[in-house]
Structure formats: C-alpha cells, structure tokens
Image (cartoon, rainbow, N blue to C red; front, side, top):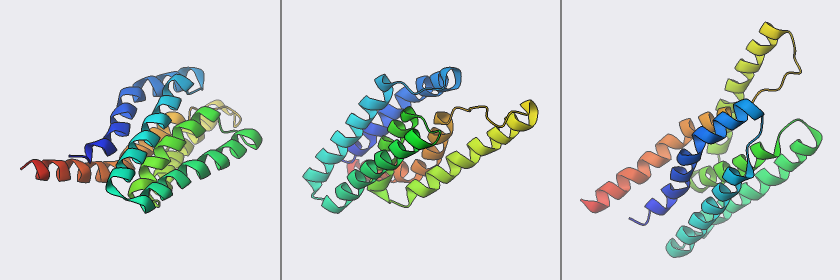
Length: 164
C-alpha cells in the first residue's frame, strides 16, 4: 500500500498536464506555479518512500538524475534554446523515471524529442521558417507518459495484489 506514495507525483502531474500543455502551446512557457510544486512533490515522495523502505540506491539514483537534469538543463537554457520551464519539468519527470530505471529517461526523451522534431519539420516545411519556436513541454509529457506507463502499471498491480 505504501507504493501508492510513488504514484502521488504521477497524480499531481496528471492534474497539471492540461494546464502545462495549454500554456506552453499558447505562451511558450511552463509556469513555476506548476513545475516547482511538481518537483517538491516528487522529491518529498521519493525521500519518504526511500527512507521508509531503505531503498537508498534507488533514492540516490533518482536524486542524482534530478541534479544532473537541472545542471545540464541549466547549461542548455543558458547557451542553447531550451526554456527553464522545460528544465524544471524534466527535473521531476526524470527523477521519477530514474527511481524505476535510469535508462527510462533516455527512452522518454527520445520519444518526446522525436515527436517534437516531426512537428518542427512540418512547421518548417509549411512556414519556411526554421527559427520558429515550438512548445516542447507537451512532447516531453508525451514521452514521459508513454515511458512511465509500465512502471505505473506495476505499482498499481502490486497495490491491488497486496489488498487481495
């Protein structure tokens, strides 16, 4: 039953996803009012669950993934064309995925970035403007949800089995 704590960040993300995607598509930004609480919930849930269950290695790899995501993302936001809202969103998403398996981060990013590139190519062909910005947040969410489905399902089935 304690495993439900691992699903809490997912539930918060589901609650915020529509607003995040809508705002990012309209305004090309992901507001702190959504991304920062998501980071706080993810860190809190992983810390509590890791401490109670003694899964220190998983906790360490999740926190390390969050730290590396922020550091690399900050560099990309500063010197490339990635928004800090995308970085903050990725911090929580990558921490949750790294808890389960660190390589899930690569799959999630690959799916999200490939989908974003397909749209960017279509926009470029249609408008002939390769510098036009696209909202990355909805594609990062898409990649995350497709990648997080199996770990989420495993948590749900474990909880259901423990109740039976």
